[in-house]
Length: 343
Picture (tube, one colour):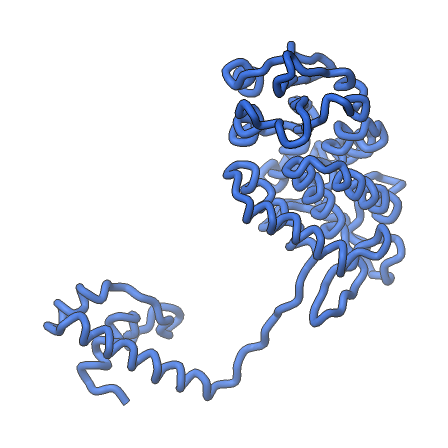
């Protein structure tokens, strides 16, 4: 046991009191710097550090005698897809290769362990994947694949997003009223097949699905994606007006649809898109509704119809910004491109 003064020092450091600091219990947390604590008890700071280290050792030994709480260490497809999107976005903004590696490795893990053809499983633990994927798994993974495409500019990610989007439409779409059910048509029978729309601590599957379909429509010229997204927006339009705070992400999707995105294209040979800083400038500029494609000048025929035939000027990386079926003149400098993104 600690001596009386040592116990007083430890209790002061970790805020342990008779009254407690949370529901009549004391939750250990640091409330004072060691140097302040040393002055308060007229001790040498090094002596206080040693005392606290001894107290930690004793506390750990006492804790080890308790029954440990259960550990939830399963991997969830949907939550990892959210993580992938976050790292892809961070890699774009900060140009950090570590973040890009996390995003691409996350996609590879999902495809290796949780994908069966064009169908997703929902959880993975101890080498075993199980449970039919839910709407969130599909919608969030499609969004993550688009985000990684915009980062890496490898069309394979768009192709994979299309496969999942088509599977999502086949198995989750409500052919009567529109919108997406939370469970697939081959899921076990439930009392109610819910159709989540409210955004909470994470966005709803329907809101992410809508925005992902709209983004894919611009990358693939698939009119059916846009039409399905329109159906969902019409379905929830009244609720969005009545309770906007419950539809934050759905409203973002509606804004993407109503405003239409700025479709940014950079034409440059492989590995040279950022020779003049155009790509870095684009990625570090906040544009709420934006698509981004980097294309080799020899492959512009692979672009959506509106963007085909866009070439370079004097062999330099050249950017175009298109919106509502109209494209800007080609630009080769960040000074000329920035106003097109922010005006």
